[in-house]
Image (cartoon, rainbow, N blue to C red; front, side, top):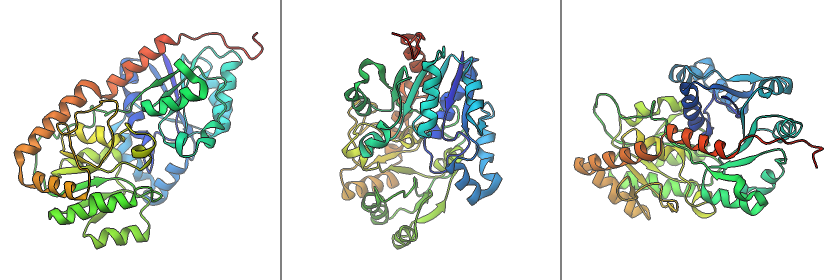
Length: 370
């Protein structure tokens, strides 16, 4: 099978969490023996920011961790048309330009023999629905949505049974506990400050509880403005800057716990969708404490796979307990790993996509068909 995936960037994970899951699941297809082609623009903004901040070395961690993947940068659409001509499956991510999304759809309508899917892994369908509805998806066979609440949005838009919930998952080939345990200390949080959509939550559910629990805090991420850096300094948190996602397992291995602070849209408007960091942290065997979010799809076992904190006081209590109770830490690690390995690896998602494709055998689609 030839699988072509159009992504904003597979090379860069600078403020681009979609790259995490895509690297892992595309590698699963490649190792299965499929012809996997990842197409991305020559200079996507994520890659531009990465190279501006870190130069060519910023890509080293990706290249070393994913030798099976060789993304193809394209400068014009002729290369895209040529690539999909003999494809069996084409998937287009919603971070692509609307014009490209429409162009690939036209190729399908004009007789393309591939199955064409649109992949949505963002909250824009509810936070900026006009931007998503502006996409011309008339040539697409179906939609992959990364949570059931997002799938429901597409069903309301008329996609019916042609939308499938396809959650992100952990790349357990790379995200796993350390082969040999070393010393662990302090708390880590890997996340971007962003546009202020969770700045209050970061302060009340991470910075203040860590300080009140007497546990040191290391923070990795990008897009931290001066006022955010001042806030981190106020609470005594150590800002470590950008971290290549491929380097995250080594960071998790040096810390006793981490925290999940969901973006507000995934609490209020798209409940039930965890970020990729939840999957990755549990896969790495690090105890996790989560700020409030509703696990409406029963992906995990809250209270067993990770601890939940309804407010800052509860978060402080959990962090104190994790700091002083190795048995609690060990139980969370065991339970979290069990759930990831049983249900939430990229290999699981590969088989889920294969099942979806079996429902969508390519059907003729011509613009002038009756």
